[in-house]
Length: 303
Image (tube, rainbow, N blue to C red; front, top):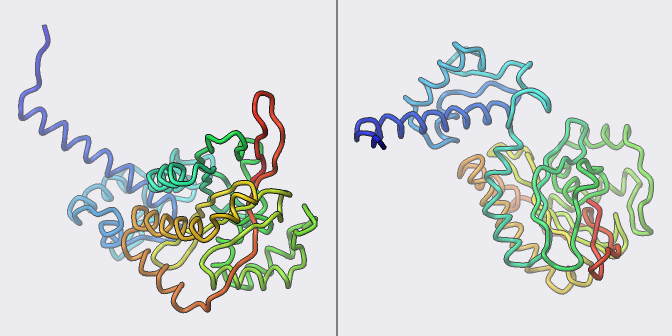
C-alpha cells in the first residue's frame, strides 16, 4: 500500500529541503572567503531573509562549522577551509553558478569552454569544462593545474591583483618559453597584465601551444577580487574568424556568473573596473595544441 504524504507533511518537507539548501549555500559562501562575513552580507549574497540567515548561522556556530567573529559576523574555522577540508567549497559554488553560461557558450560556438579558479600560489585550477563536439577539440584532462603566468585564465585573474603581489609571484615562478610567442620577461608580463585589466579580457594567440588560441575573462566579487575565469579555447584560425564575437560573449557570460555567484553588486564592480580602465587589447594566455587521434582528424590538448 502506498501512503501519500499529507499537505502538512509536504509543507514540512519543502521547508526542510529549503533550509538544507540554504545551509549548504552558507557553508560554500564562508568556505570561499578568509575574512568574517556579516549577517546582512550573507543574506544579500544568497538572496534569503535575514531572519533565516541568522537562524542558520547560529546553528552552524553551535555545531562548530562557523565561529562567531563579533558584531554579528561569522567566519569559517581554518581547519574546515582548504582543498582537502570541507566538501564542496567555493569551487563547487562557482561551477554551479557558471553551468548555465558554460552550456550556452558551448551551444553558441561549439568550442571548448573552461572554468578556472586561482590556486594559493597564483596558478590556475580547472574546476569545470564543456568539451567541444568538433573533431578537433580541447582536452583539459591532462593538466588540472595550469601556470598562471602563461595562460589566458591566469592573466585574466592576475591582472586584478596588486602589482606588488604580481612581482612576488613572478619572482618565485620559473618561466620557460613554451612557443616562439611565449612572453617570459617579468616586466613585459606586467605590461601585458595591465593591458588585460584595461581591456577586460586576456587573449592567447599561439603563446602556450602552437596553432591554438583563446580568450578568458575574470569573474570578480563585489570588491573586485578575482575568484575565477571563464575561458574559450580553439584552433587559431577558428578563433581569429570570430574573435570579437567570442570576446563579447565571454564578457557577458562572466557578468552573469558574477551576479549568480556574488549578487548584482559584483556586476556593478566589474562595470566600474571596465569604465575606469583605458581601452586596450591584451595578448595573453590559454589554449590547446592540435594532435591527431585515432578515428578523428585531430584533438586539441593543453590548458
